[in-house]
Image (cartoon, rainbow, N blue to C red; front, top):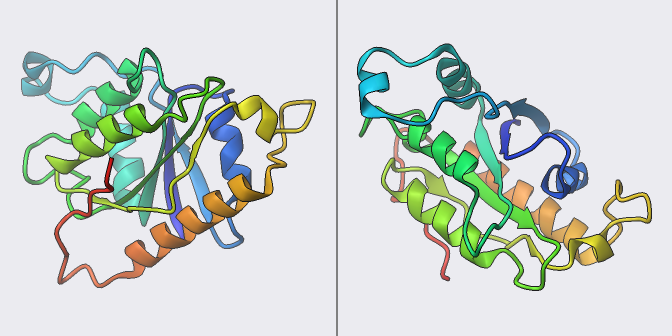
Length: 187
């Protein structure tokens, strides 16, 4: 299964979570660092090249994995901007009927649930099929990685990531001719 990985930064805890993805998952990192701020006037003139590249990565993938940090009890503006670009044009965006999983880790105690809910809410409008779980919302992430900070060593977190990826694969293999309504995880 080919998965477009959309994350806020290249060297962050959330990206290190994906090492727990099960075999058979090909992760293709989609760069969102150089997207212009979404603006309808810019869109009316044609999507900029970085936007087209992001859309192509999502279009070519079987599913999408969004890794979100939590800032001030919400998702990052950079990730929200990427979702805004991907949600256009309305009703025919590359997210329509696309299976999407959301995960995250934070150094704080809150467990990133507010940011994940904001991302899920933003995915509802374009009609993405949001995978409900298992939930990957890791608080105090530094305790889940080895001392070098690179390898996910928390067994429960590894199992949750693998389970979420398996659920994403299952959603991606569902017949696309009879899509179901987007599934929204409970807050």
